[in-house]
Length: 567
Image (cartoon, rainbow, N blue to C red; front, side, top):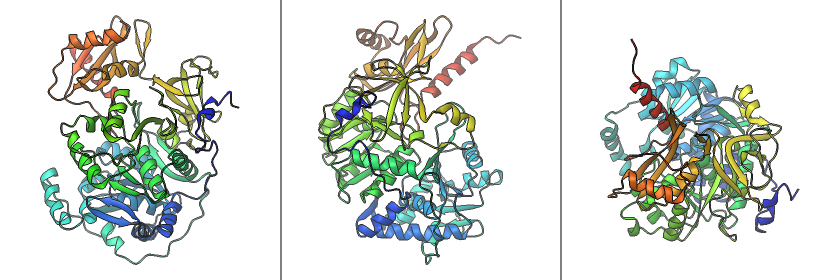
């Protein structure tokens, strides 16, 4: 077994290679935290603080109300909220009622929202009053029977709660008035009620779904990933084992990563409650607000994404802020440039390491060690406890030896049950217990894994296989580059050609020729970008992942428009 799992020899003695899981449903973590740490602050939100006792009470009242309006075991309930206290209350309330959470991005358009509501069959949705008009428009085309509405101001301290409606009117140009009547319910009114008698449904830990988490949909329509209580609990407990220096009730976690993204949900919304840590919530990522929050609230743990760390490091007044409270950060969702990792550690004095995962694995499967082990440059680390990983040949499907590039596959208790109502897609992605990730990579002799690129992002130019990630790593080393993404765009001669989209640091001026000279010093000629485009910003998902496919689609559209039209 050690030959197939060489990474186990690198584990520090504090991390077990196998874990004993609690086998309790996700919502039990909140019950435990309220019993063991009732007066501990669970949430800090823009000056307002809520204890674990209060959080549990509100979730319990809301869960009873959900059952009263017809939500029972297995019913899907959409949560369309930014990172706010009501997002935490709603998440645990839906699970307590026996429902299945459908995390929904508040930025969704009507078309995207309608698709997800219809696909999931959600019976109710919890959202903000500012989003109520959008939800109302899609209501007739879906199975939604109830809308529960909240407002940011409901969980703001005085006088912010009085001022906020004016800020919102100025920001969005509208005021939405919602009444508590018929199928529309006001969360602040619900929470004032006495708790209803809650019907406690028996949860099958192995089989019952806790979550439908929709994938980004970069390859067609988003798919609902079915994650069970076992999937989520096992992954959270793996994360806990990895963070072996953190102590229950003693840490505070910065919650910037949105809860509607699986990484933010597991590492903040579940793991923090499991350990009774304080969640410092920010409804959106703003560089200055984040720096001020870190200095004032002094979080110790900071799960994030590369674009978040890059944004902080490039703020002109960075040195004015004290970030020394931060002890540990695991970066996910995209490749972490080595330059960013080193600079962030210098600024904070904490540890920043790269991890890896995907929605289909709840999400974390690999990480570098935070403590007691040397840094491995460019690696996503080693598999988590109870997690197997392998590299399979794209041609033969056979398991490949160390050093050879193929598709990364994962096996473990955090791997999804399948895709919601998509048996064919499930069969393609789950084979013989292995989750095929679609990522190309290799494993070294020590069991450390490396991502080469997404299978779908690989560029084939003039017969050569070119991996965008390798080029991006080089371009990030240029002192004037803030962000960069590389993509293959159509080329009539080479099939595809390499193009780099670059955001320069403030005040920097670099020409295409200078970038080209820099790239060719560090890359073989066929890998160096042929075209550079300088932009003020790059298209991103809500979690900060750069949308490479959006840029490729833009190029294809331009080519189509430039093509001569024949009569």
